[in-house]
Image (cartoon, rainbow over all chains, first blue to last red):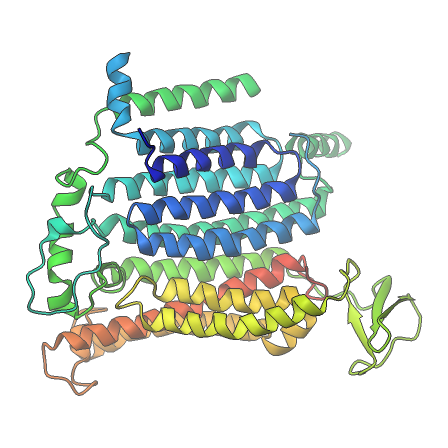
Length: 81
Length: 132
Length: 279
């Protein structure tokens, strides 16, 4: 039995989400969160929500990553958890 | 137990949304770093959007752009439901706006207290209260 | 704290899983969410507004109020970032860095030292957390930005026929300016697109949206009922093209607002409110 593509994408999304909150470096968390957003956008495109996927690709994977990186750049990269 | 698994097999999108929601909620409650909390909030938001988009899906149907012909009869059952898409499109743009404001607040807190950890901020606040 | 949090999360997840069992199956076309209202929108979008992309029709016409206040929310977020972070640029920073363009040397000028002229061709100011000057990054971004902006205009204009619209096009336009700011520096970007411009354009975007609604009101119809615009556009009464053009003008307003607010938030976040040194 071959796994459907949306199942694989959803599994990757869950993995990225868990990594994004558990990694000890905030810059890495921001970048993994960008990957999470892009995979989520992929899964919505598979489900036929093209407008939502387009918005998430520009907003979630693009601009919000820049915001996160800017905020981390001007505060601190270190975190205790 | 077994029937739960067979029922969930047909609804794996809902399982994924519940797991992501739990991840986001866990980050918001347990993590003490403010940026981690904000990322958790964003994960929570996207999980809700995933839920709405999943409810709109119809197996084997096409995207909600109808043919460019004013007189052709459109069978609504042949297209994916566009209404949840619209609601979630606005939700995504609002989520980036809230992310910006939340990060601005975190930066302001860092400027004031020199840390992003919640415990240290609480300690600072307590010692300030003790002085006055 | 950790145990309580984990327990709350697990209880929440268990309850949600229990109730998720009662949902209709994934991909079921006859579920309640897919039956009552949305078939009406799908069947009438061409007839009412002459717009094939039903998402755009619902966004800007059937649910126009929602989108209008959402644009206002975006503008409010920009204002909130401005009031939270913005502060005066410090007049004498501790040390400034300059690059000697012909040789590529980096100079560090201490406080009180003689600074080169503001418009000097030989020395350019660089950020204190500077990265090495890269020809590849600068020129690639210079090439890409024009195409990003062109694509953004296409997305705004073709929101009626393909995925896209005001939000996506606005964010793309904003990200092209952000890309310029990252590949060059913030001061040069601020010279080309000032903060005041961003604030005014954001307000103008919301004004275009609500102004379209008010024109409809003046023509004797309901707020945001674009059918009333047909005499102004030289169309027959009841022509669906009037709604199509109304949706287009609204999308332009959304694109303006979203573009300038994204840039505005980026300016404030990337320089921590000082507007002197960016990423």
